[in-house]
Length: 109
Image 1: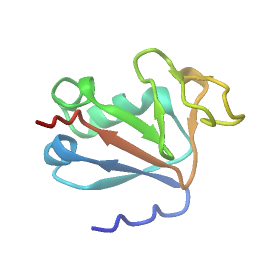
Image 2: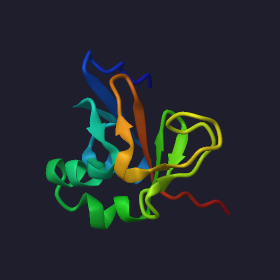
Image 3: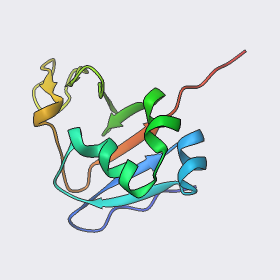
Image 4: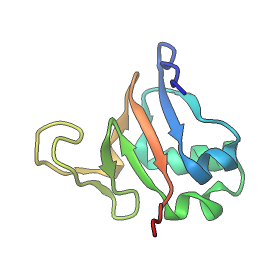
């Protein structure tokens, strides 16, 4: 299923697996710019209970780079600017046209 491009002035959040099941949708669009540090509060206000039941164990990516929502920095090379530089979560801004993914843990056997 193809995801829709966010409208002007918005970013897209894509939900996978249990995140999609909890929200009952594959994606959302939210106004940008938006502080990444407030993302979980935004999602909890829209989907009460999502923090405890889904987000507490999820990985988060911004434009395919992982964001460390617990430790407080984007730790992947190239994230938020210069390659190899960490950007504190408190200063990370989700911009217009950005793609955020909520990725619950997966298992294999």
